[in-house]
Length: 506
Image 1 (cartoon, one colour):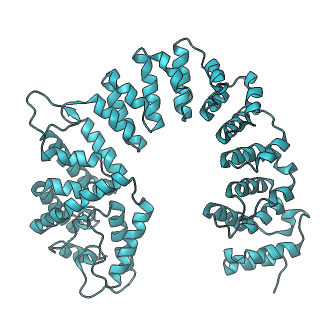
Image 2 (tube, rainbow, N blue to C red):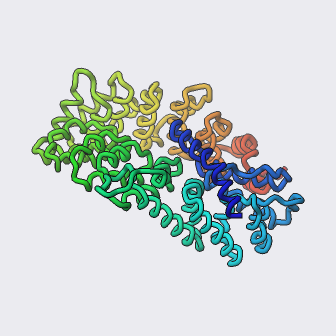
Image 3 (cartoon, rainbow, N blue to C red):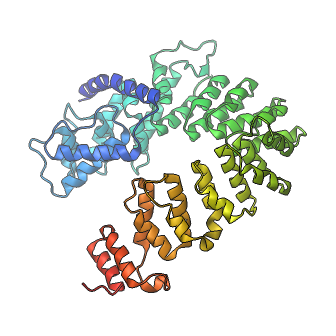
């Protein structure tokens, strides 16, 4: 079994690495929910007699976990397994002696062997751990590449501490056996080789938890971390937790060459750290160039930095907003964040700006400052061609929803019209409540937009359908008609209950 399992690692290792590289190049990958659905679907196919319905190498940890859980739960429910049963099915069998015997199979998937290291039955667990221990010694690189993301998931289980500790030890041995590229080599460090490649690959793998795990190990490994490389990693890392680890390591090196790299990162928290570090480098005057950042967090750090340098960020914002070339919407947002009453008229003037994002930022700023904007102005902006403007106008009108003309809003629910206008009108009708909210929701239960459709259905399901609930706004006949149009949303009992409340006995 150990030799066969190692051979299986060799067959799947290159496929696994190529899958990681492809997902990183394209920026795509399935989420945990999609992976779990794939695993359950493969389990159903296996139980239906398709012996080939087993996740492929590199399928992802959530696929394997859902696969194993689905096979065991369905088999335990009395479903007759195919004869002869393939190893993958017997490894997930509800009976412990069947799982233990299946571990001797030469074709047992290594991922399921890893799952069984957390098994409730001690004989199964001990045998699976012995196999995994042998694999980590005999073929450490292939085992770590294939199973680290899965081991991290299993480590959360009550009996998962063993596999997590073994994998961490193996990865630390790998890092200690080479001089990885992310550390500055010492005078007697061995040359970089295959031993360091596993951890380097994990730093680039698409699994977020595996990347975080690898970053922690890399930063606590032998040697001194290369600050510039850490900064580059932080700037390119989409996961905030992993990016934060790289950022802390880069800044801890007290190397000012990393600041520009961090300040240009994609993650706001990393950019904010880079901007804040400008003061330590004696470059606080550069904070002005970050006042109009797209992130509120970075703008806040930039204002602090300008203030530390003796400047007035508010005056800079006023200058940016009055720029003849046109203000940035983020400069408008920053001006509103400064919170001075003298800027209200300036923000009101920007509500009519030709650029939609600027109009939206001005509306958001006025709402942030609780400034009064005429209902007529906001109602006109509900039909704005820029979605963010219509959204901000609807949010500004929420306190006034009760005094708006419901017919005016209902006329904007046509599914053939712009989606953002329909959603803005629906938001206000929901805020108004009563029969107007119910009419709007029933009108949108078949909307083509999934979120709008689901929101409408939630409103309809939440309605109690008591005539007294609408306080004379609608008669029983209209409520009965609305219930009939939305009947498909309810089960027989729920529909009957609502019909009885309306006095409909037939």
